[in-house]
Image 1 (cartoon, one colour):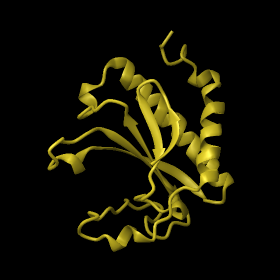
Image 2 (image 1 turned 120 degrees about the horizontal axis):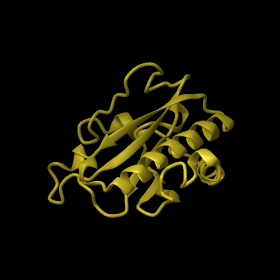
Image 3 (image 1 turned 90 degrees about the horizontal axis):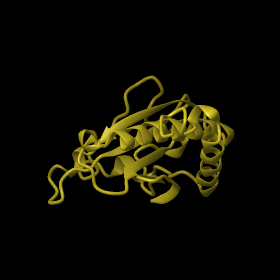
Length: 160
């Protein structure tokens, strides 16, 4: 995972083996720094921080991917953790951001994403390309710019 951004309680990363190909819109994951099973365990502060971070990251992802030649029309946000239900350590909350390109080949725009289990259909994901280093750098820069806007300020989000 390539680190894009880090907040007090969460990391924003780009997976090396994405579930959505870069040309289809790309894939970003937000993880808590400490294991949280599901959102019911979030404190009020963590919940607000996570919501703000998903919005900022989604806005940055949309802007940057369009600037970098991928026609992202929207972002799908998915709260996951189900893959860990059979692991000894159990499930863990994480949020996926799936870019939805209007010209998508695999995850067609306007249709639900399709995610076959990697163990059952590993070929489905094999050709998927991750975000480029330029995408990651540009998204990092755009997040920093957006965080300075009044609409994302600590005051607007009730942190001060």
